[in-house]
Amino acid sequence: MDKHPVDNSRDQSLDGRTVLVTGGTRGVGAGIARAFVDAGAEVLTCARRPPEGPVKGTEFRPLDLRDPDAVREFFAALPRLDVLVNNAGGAPYRPLVDAEAERHARIIELNLLAPLTASLAAYEHLKRAKGSVVMIGSVSGSRPSPGSAAYGAAKAGLENLARSMAVEWAPDIRVNTLVVGMVRTELSHLHYGGEDAIAAVSRTVPLGRLADPSDIGAAAVFLASDAAAYISGASLLVHGGGERPAFLDAATANKGKRVEG
Image: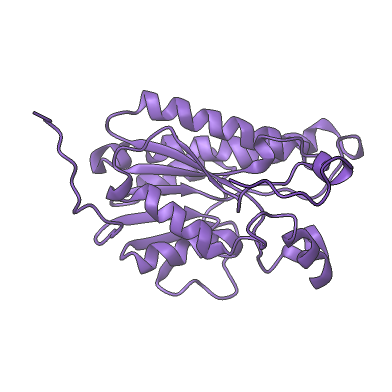
């Protein structure tokens, strides 16, 4: 007889749980924060600067995630925490030879060391709550990332860190990574250009569009919820099918032929 029957009552409700979304004031982070609000959670967001307009239903608190002492003080003051979403990060376009190593190191600090610092500071809260950590990774961590090499290296490290944390912190805390592809946000023009460029980039995605922040939010809620109670150490690809290999468009053999199932 199965000693662990499947509980079909598990859902994605997060009523009564407290969630912190780092960098949850705009873009992907705001989409994640909204999704957790919709799931019934009490949602905190943090960033270095207050948002122009806070995400409805969330509470903002200022925090520089690159200041370890401030991070530890911040988490120590929280009454409880059930879910930590390490979303804060990013990088400008910067070829490696255009900056000294110290500037690239700052990108690694924000995208890898800051999530580690926050996770360690949140550990006792999450252990008491039998909670979870959701890392916001990137496809840049699994492919060449010219112009953002330090960012790609940091995201590769973040995914590996999450797998190790999932083993070390089990069975008390689950740790997973969302491997995020291209997302349309208020800053998309800085990465892709104007509307025509965004449309052209969208056509390179098998599903035919860039992700909406709400797509990332829905996946984060799933990983944090009881519906994912047996998922830990996983990397969930949220990239619309990935990228069509460039050689297929360059090759002349089999042009126009369809692969039938």
